[in-house]
Structures are given as structure tokens and as C-alpha cells.
Amino acid sequence: MATQHFDKFFKGLGISDAFSLINMIPLWMLDINPKQLLTQMVNFNPTELMAIDLKAYRADLIMELDYMILMFEFQSTHIYLDDKRRFNIYTAIKDRARFGNKPIYVIVFSTVEDTHVIDYKINPVSSFKILVISLKDYNASEIINNIEIKIKNNQKINQNELINLALSPLMTIESSMSQHLEKTVQTLNKLRKSIKENSKFVFTLTWILVDKFIEDDETRQKLSNILSDNMRLIEEFGQSKYEAGEQKGEKRGEIRGIKKGIKKGIKKGFKEGSEKRSWEIAENLLKEEVPLELISQVTDVPIGRLELFNNNGK
Image (cartoon, rainbow, N blue to C red; front, side, top):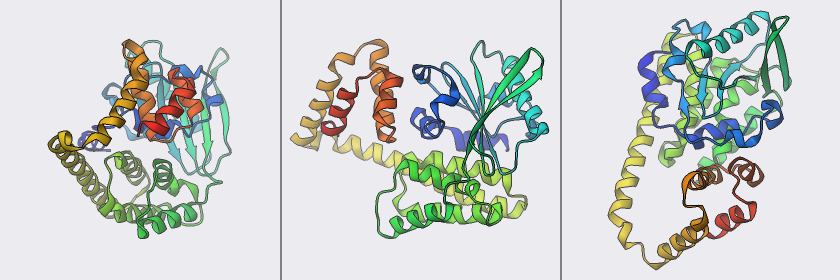
């Protein structure tokens, strides 16, 4: 992956983007208190962790959170000894980058493996865990067909459906990865007319897979260009929406004022320090349709208040 692509594809991604992928990881695999997922920032592909230029020795996607580092690998083959050694290098980079005592998790989204935890022993007294998440039981064709039907009927497509679409090339072994990636990019391109600013992470994930699995230079460049063009539209859409909101902000009428008042009233007890930040994170997670129980565990916001906000605050 060329360095200039990092700014283009990862700039502007935030906490809600991170959770749209983190939400696919069973909490029992992380072996942590869910509150450790509470984060005030997320840094995608930190520069310090990308210092080693050899593509074989860096993870496909890295998220640095407040309390941990998540290294994601997307794999279409079984995990063998060479892979485990490669993942060990990922964990060694953490010390080189001086990330302190943050635990590091290597998370593999796999086409062919079952969901399980690999406890890889480096030596008799040292080991680390590889969390393998199976995608082989998903129906990639059904995911794409359902989204194309929704596009045709101008129906809403939620973030979970889009994430599944981005990962769909890893959900099938019936066709070549190259063919399936082209199909995924074509489907994403059909969203051009209904593009949303929160779709950027979906295009980013797809680009990662294109960059990794498409061997033909011409095809890889063609698909990357399509993704880049769509991401440019996302940014332009977001900017125009922001500017339009500024211009019309004072003319929205009493209904908007009432809704704002409801939101402010619900948030009133959570306005200081970390509690305010918890609400900001909770709002983002609600938008991504993360289960209320998980949001409550992560943010300490009571489920009752989340339900009230969800029902009356929109």
C-alpha cells in the first residue's frame, strides 16, 4: 500500500467506523472488561506501526484505541506456522513503536477457518493469542443480491449490511477473489447516487482487500480508482451537507427545537468530564445499530436512558 493512500483512505475515519468492525468480534475472544473498549480516540494505521515497509510484515488494518491495539488481517487461506510467525512480528512492532503497556490483539477474518482462539507459543514462557473470526458461513451472494435490491428500490442500507458487503469477498470460495472483488466494487459504485458520508469506512475496507488480493496491476488500479472517486464524492457530500445545515440551521422551526430540547434534557446529567464523552460515544454507537446492552456495558450509560434517547431524541 503506497503511503499517499493512507491519507486518502484513512483520514477522517472515527470511533463509529472502528466499532462497525469491532462489533463483529465476540467479546469473549478479547478477554477484557467491555469498559476497556471505551475510547476517546481511534488512530487508524498509526505511522509508528507502519515503519517497516515490507508488506509481508505489517497487518492489513491497525486500530490504536485508548487502552489497546487491534491488528486486523484478512485471510483466504488456513493459518500455518509462517502466518503465526508473521503475526508474532506484528506484536513485536508494538514494543518498537513504544506504545507502553497497551495489550495487542491480532484478529484474523478468515474465509476457511472456524471461529476460535490460537494460543501461539513463541517459547516455553512466552505466548500470544490470535483471534480467528470465521466468515465462511455467511452467504456472500445473498448479501450482494439483497443490497442490489435495496439500491433498485431506493431502500435504506444500514452500516452492518455495508460492512458485510465490504467483507463479502472473504465469504466465498466459489469464485476467484479477483472476480468477487470486482463484483463488490461494482455494487458499491451503484450507491453513487445515494452516497452517504458514513460509508467511507466501507470503501476503505474494500480498498484494503483490492490492494491485497488483486494481483493484476491494471485491474487493481482500475478498482482503486473507482473506490477513490466514490470516496471523493463522500467527502464532497459531507461538506455540502454541513454547509447547507449552517445556512438552514436557524430556519428549521419548532419541531427541530423540541427534538433538540429532548436530547439536551436526556443528556443533562451527563455533561461533565468523561460522562459527556460517554454520551458522544453512545450516540455514535446508536447510529451504527450496536446492541443497546453492549453500548451500556462500554459507556456506563443506563439502557433505559439509551432507549429513551433512541425513541424520543431522533
